[in-house]
Each structure stands twice: as C-alpha cells, then as structure tokens.
Length: 229
Image (cartoon, rainbow, N blue to C red; front, side):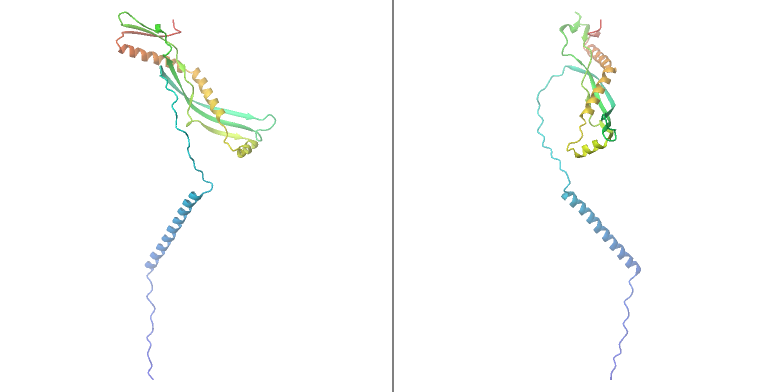
C-alpha cells in the first residue's frame, strides 16, 4: 500500500502591528465622520421640519410721501442726553412679591436747538446807505421735540410680583413699554430746557451770520436778538 505523505500546513504570517494600528485609526476616523454627518443632518432636518419654528414675513405697504416743506431754520446746536427711568407700581393691599412691578429703563436721546428765520419782519435786517454796515435782529432759539434713540434705549432691570408674572405668561401680547418711552422723552425734554443748549444755539447762530455777512463785504455786522435792547 502506498501511503501518501501529507505535508504539514503552515499558519499564515502574522499581520504586522503597524498595519493593524493604522487600520484601527482608519476605522475610528470613519466612525467619527459618520457621527458628524449624522449630527449635521439631524440639525438640518430639525431646522427644516421644526414645528415650533417661526418665519417672519414683511407685508408692509410702500412708504408714501405726503408732503414736502421748505426749511427756513438754522439748526444751531444739538444735545445728547441719557436718563434712567425708575418706575414702580404697587398694589394698595398686596405686598410687592404678590402684585407690583419696578422697572429700570435707560433712555437715550437727542434734542436739537434751532433758530427760525421764517417769521422775521421786514425791518429785521437793516443795511447802511453805503452798504458797509448791517444789523440783524433774530428770535431766540427754540427746542425740537426729543428724538429718542430706540437702539440705545432699553429695559435695564425689572422686578415683578407673582400675579404680574402669571398675567404676562397668559397674555398674548408683549408688555407695553410705551409709558417708559414717554417718561424718558419728557425727562430729557425737561433736562434740555434747563440746560445751556438754547444759549449755545443763539451764540452759534450769531457767529454764523457774522461770518457769512462779512464774507459778503460788510465791514460791520451787528446781530441782536428781539429781547435785547
């Protein structure tokens, strides 16, 4: 009988450690890339299908020009003001923790001072016969309405009672801050009236007219106001 001699099978050579390590890093990098793609896709899908998302649509009508007025006034000075409105509202028979609010509001705005030339009488400007001297009599400066800057005006702090918080949660409209803006405008207007803004506007107007009339050839220029002797 012929016996076939079987050769022993040798095991395949072991994979180098460096190759296995690189394969592990590639696998880990692939898993991280897949996770990043899943997270980004989930966010994009949620932002697109978010049932609580809001969309703003501006359906305002075009602005219509109603009138144009010729300006016959000189804006001589402008003052910038800032005020902190401290408004507190209390209930008659309830503590502040239950019913009551206190709001600190920062109001920033400007007030312009101007001299109106439209109402000058005919004898307000007097010129000498040789046209070397001129005399001008002006009205005093006036103050424009307060121009509150909405970008720089804001609620700094607010304390509310429990009932006020519940009422705000149940209300469909945001809290009305018109009263705060009105108070800020009023206080800034009062500060402008008590400041030196109008006197500064009178001085600037006088200097402007003196320089302009001298440039026209007048050697002597006298600018007075209606209430001056």
